[in-house]
Image (cartoon, rainbow, N blue to C red; front, side):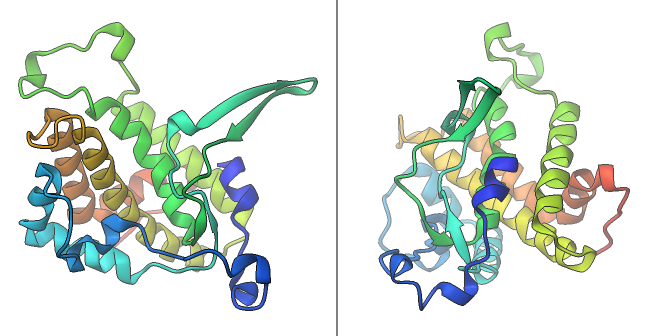
Amino acid sequence: AHVLAGYHIDLTGELDTDPTLLSFDRAMPWMLKLPNTHDYAREVVLEQIKQDDFLLHHLDAAARQWSCNGLIHGDVNLKNFMLQPTEQGDCVKLVDWEMANLGDPLWDLAGLMQAYVAAGLRYSRPDAEHYELPESKQFWSKEAIKTIWSKIWTTYASKTGWGEAKRQIALEKLVGFMAARLLLSAAELNRISPEFLAPGAWAMIAEARSYFKHPGSLINIINTSAGISYEA
């Protein structure tokens, strides 16, 4: 959260005047454009989404909230964070900036927060109720993830200087972006065998659906440490 907040600077006033920013194409993430895209790879995850009016509606709603106002990494996930030893201690670095662009900083934050869920869901199986993951593939429990989300949000929001009203608006947008980013994770996971729907990808789609369907519940989880409740 410290790393993201460090480069998420509002550039609204400089987007059309700073020559160093004019080379960015400012494209929206392709998952957010999927509802209005007719020419797309015929992969089973994308077909699943394109045939689901509920998901398409909420992806379109998330796309309408997109705001291009800062530098974004574009592909924030756990594997792109590295620890670099220094004389002052370990320093967290964010690497792999090939998808960097100008866009909505909350997309990066959504990428980080959904990554903790995606890491566990990728090993889901249809008989998951009777299946115990090998110790090497056991990730965070749901309770642990709730704590992680809350700490990430509290740290990030405190760095932005947002007031309470702005935080609430940002949280509502963040939940939609988390769902969209989880659908993107499902598509990326399924590219190993794009003609078959992997159990892990199916689980990610189901989780994304729940975020779209019950945003208030997710907001309350993220806001736990702040003691704030959300009412739709």
